[in-house]
Image (cartoon, rainbow, N blue to C red; front, top):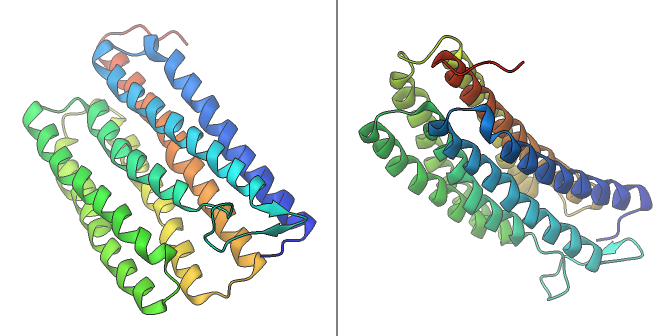
Length: 251
């Protein structure tokens, strides 16, 4: 895949942006532990884990892109020194379940409700990622469509659990928390929606330099929103609940 200098620099800089965003968010959520009550700190730890794992994989993606490039030519042929897209799927397989668990953790629901939600959301999220990967690496359009449809089924189930089942547990939350969780779910839909769009783009689009750049930029921006902005919103919810339960506001 031949990229011109502007395209190559754009992808290079976007990967760099994704890497530093993940690392900065990891540090911020770690040092913010004392700003919330102890019972909400697990949610911040999981948020830090999400961005740390993503930061590590962006370092690998960044290095893979550099090593697969020579004079603007990026190797995408699946060889040992080609650009490795699989790093993204390994990242998503680890971080997407954690993203969902941290939402449940920050709400501090009863043990029974939390366990029920986790036992449904985690397997569904893992299935969504695992079913998407065979279609991502396949060159056969029928295979791509098949696995695209299959991976959409657990995604729809996740939305059902988040909006219907989780919604039943928001009535007893402090003022403003339910609204913030509502915005958090919309953020999740908006950012996760980028992934199937990019997936479809790979199916119907041509294998051009512009399509490669569009997909990589789209994936990276969606990752930053879905992990960093998501994590900062989790911190906001933890702060709101901590203050509502008597913790002094230090602002």
